[in-house]
Image 1 (cartoon, helix red, strand yellow):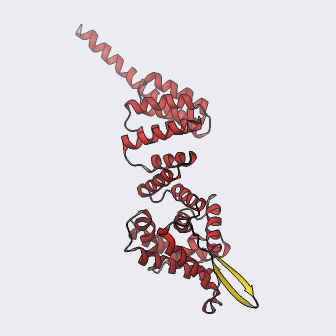
Image 2 (tube, one colour; image 1 turned 135 degrees about the horizontal axis):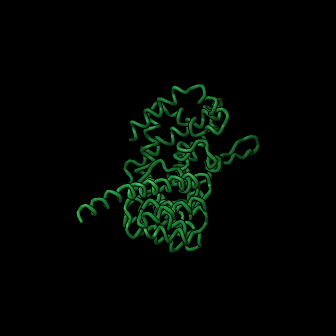
Image 3 (cartoon, one colour; image 1 turned 135 degrees about the vertical axis):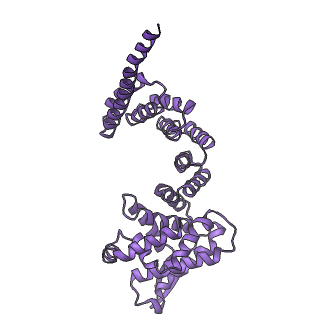
Length: 339
């Protein structure tokens, strides 16, 4: 009997190894098809992999991803649920996939609950906070949307989408200073993407919309437009910003180019933010954006920073091409200063 048992064991080892090899192969072919946009083909191979290992987290995750991409949202939720029940390694993407699928089915409120559950189970993660924020904005809960955008930024400061939405949200609410802060940061992270022009357009309108010049009898009257409904927290900041923009009409600034004035006003504004806000209550704006900009203003890299965030303009791009060394030095400095 012992000889028979040992013989059977020896025969079964190659079968197990072959089975594991087939599982790996099915997953690889599935991923290859998914990457080429052949989602139905990918799903076929993942199903073959699941026949070998029905409880595989990897296979369940990959099939849920392909099902989502194939717009089979209900099925994607089914496979995501299997991971959420028992999974560990793929728990985060499973929550994101399930929440996103529910949102695509028009069940945004249920999607919100899924992302909230994910945060409770996994902890803070910028992708969960960001997706939760976007869904809160969809149901017009702007307060909670903003809270979770800020949490996403704290978890991952270089997540461009969070700064993008924060800038747009505050622009829609007419909050000039928060719009500027989020825009100034976003434009450094994404100075030349599809979304750059949208934020740069908002950025320019905030710059240009605070001051109006009227000629009366040969004399220039400067009208400073300060939002009366602006959050009191930023009232002084907005007034200061308006005065800086109005300063272009002063005699001392007459011979300065538009680019030179932008650099000067940006530096002055950043310094004001840092010095004025140092004794104010601690909040997201004072703890995240303002110290970052204040350090830039006090450094030798202000001009480089300003050129980087305005590289959609021809003049800035030309300057950057001619000053590659300064750009490299800026990023080396920033990486050390803000790590």
